[in-house]
Length: 473
Image 1 (tube, rainbow, N blue to C red):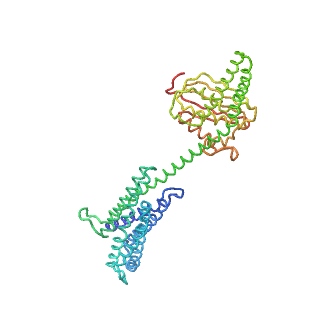
Image 2: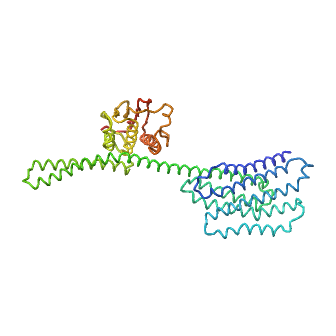
Image 3: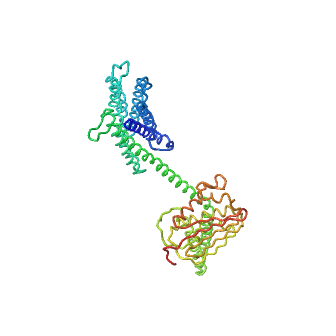
């Protein structure tokens, strides 16, 4: 009785291991994956499911019901042979498809492998017996394992090992697990295709089925961990898409600023052009040094102003520096206001900046934060509305506040405004990434961003920067 119970447990968990492999593959959503193995994993899942049912037929045969059992032995033996043949055929097809992915120029050679295996099997077992005795069943079962199972496991295992090199750029851990799954499959192929079923290993005094079951659990372990490569790939794809959208958001912000910047640069250049014309006229007459000097000074002043605006725009758009440097938050706010150009003249803008220490910062990233918030404030505030900007130093942190007198945000949306792609603007007016980008940049600087808003009363955005490790200045 203990022996029958152990056999029952052996085949129960042996089958469960393969069934779990099938479930772990089919439950994984790989439709959006760019990995080529995603298109052939269904073959491996079919192998796992059919092999699980085969082992559970073995379990059924081990159940103690002599009369009922004897009548069904031939049918069960036939079903077992069909299942073991079908399951290893799926594994062979999977292995060949993997090798075709790894060696795309060898398709004809790999296409011949299933045909060679099936012909070898038919030649070995022909003529097929009319009745399936236990001896005949064991003979055919062994040949299926020899000619289909062993090549299938070898192809699939070798394919997974070689394919692992193509996923190292996504996940080194995933690549190692593909290698582990391949080695475990080859081991399982040797145990099932070389060593006959029912063999007891003399050294360990244990049935070969025990080691097959253990290798099945090892395959399960590595396959489940290898499948996390798809999660890593999805994460990388999401990060890439978010990066693209973030750049789109920045271009959107630059587009909004373009008119104001062009107008802001055009004013000093127009002044320069007028002074040059007048200077040419002055030089045609007796030279008045005082008047000429005045015109040259005006030209220099206006050129400096245009150059300063151009530098601010260039610094905002190129993103060259990524290292933290001591920076004045007040200077960052002033340069952000410069980038707004003439648009800021459409609002009653009040700026109150207290003396504050320097903070370690990536200046152009914080400019992006203030620009996003100020543009949002202007979008929400009617023309000639009030927008207040202030900074102050309190409790070992610097607080920057931007208050607008706009339409405000409904209470149910306050918790959503930091989420990527959430926007209250009309389609085409924003990507919904502005505040989520601000949140990420503030987190990068160890700071926090908070919103307070009332409908039709306006919104206050508070940015807090800790002063740990800063230098005064």
